Length: 298
Ligand code: GLV
Ligand code: MG
Image (cartoon, rainbow, N blue to C red):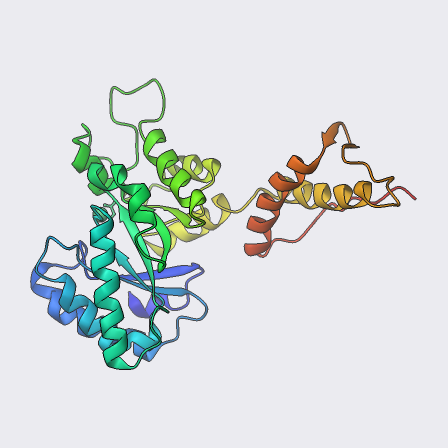
């Protein structure tokens, strides 16, 4: 799996010491992960290791062994089941000490924080500012559903009997608000039915529409759909770039220094520019190119 992961078209990759690694395999897993990171070959992917949460006996050894043996070849640690700011502070302190003792650059390794309990969601504002290392907030739907005792076993889907909205809306929106307020990435978690691509699309589209930056893939077969869903649609990308060009021209001397102007049937102004910047940035990050380019009046 690790060998295959090196060439996949994902932006980021995490190697798991937590729930996908059996208790008896944790010690061996640390060695396998450190060796794989040191072997390299992951291209430009962000390389993350998920350590165990602080209620287990394993977190400290995960950090000491993985960062101690492969700290130069690792970008982030992911902390699951984050309960509050002290969980983050503890990881930051331990990481700092390992960096110092190993002669690594202090503070380079970032943190991805998983929110997957009611406690974590309620403490999210203080969690998000608990360490300057935090780069990303990740929703963990499976553990979260267990934590709030949601009456279903199908991760990410609406619980049977709930037919009046999206049972995840409050959770997703809360994570997104705190992520944006602190300039962090917001990432949606796994969809377990790996062969059900229609289901994956249905669930992914919800968080993508709200503004999430991406979603976990558990299997290579999920990557293409997710890359498409979290990128803008071609029409929207073209439109965003055209708004930026048209607004630049209309506000210039050639355009008569107009703050509000028409683009086709639509009025655009400074707020349109800000919305367009979001879509344009997502499209550029996904490597999209323009297919329909606005031309200034001759
Ligand atoms: C991921 O860790 C999840 O619990 O969904
Ligand atoms: Mg989990």
